[in-house]
Image 1 (cartoon, rainbow, N blue to C red):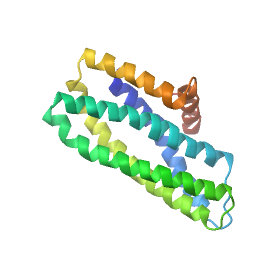
Image 2: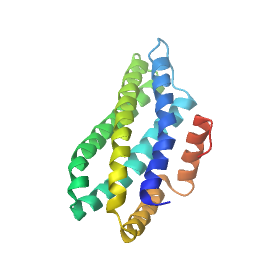
Image 3: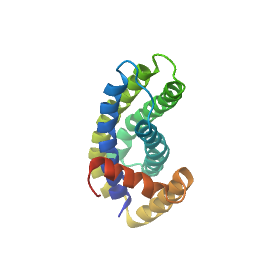
Image 4: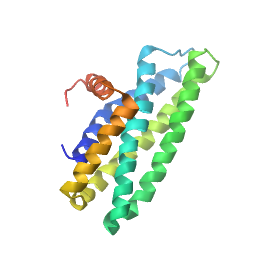
Length: 181
């Protein structure tokens, strides 16, 4: 797979998690909501797989594209990067709210629900923008660029998810979707 296919594949893994996040958010908004293993896995996936791994790869791609200076790809990068920053803020807030929920703090279910909903809505729209962006980007990257980026992607996966982590999260997302990618 080339790097654009890798990122697109990851979008396919992320999409069902966002559907689950929205459903889970509705459940957490109900009185008496408590933390459970599904929520813990979901929050871990959003933090580690999406924020730390996937978005780190995209950052590497953005930097590479900015260095190339092609107008067709440099203009959207700033907006996409700003959205990554907002998603990172939501991920951090979600982690704090999740800990509050695990500690049994009153009202924390609603707080987690709000962050999950905001995160899912923003990331769904963000993924749509990136998919359009990837179509243009693919034409700009040569085989040497692809090889260099793929090596960095592999390093990012290892550093953020550890040995077997990518496979574990991929499997979890596939099971969530009821499909094999």
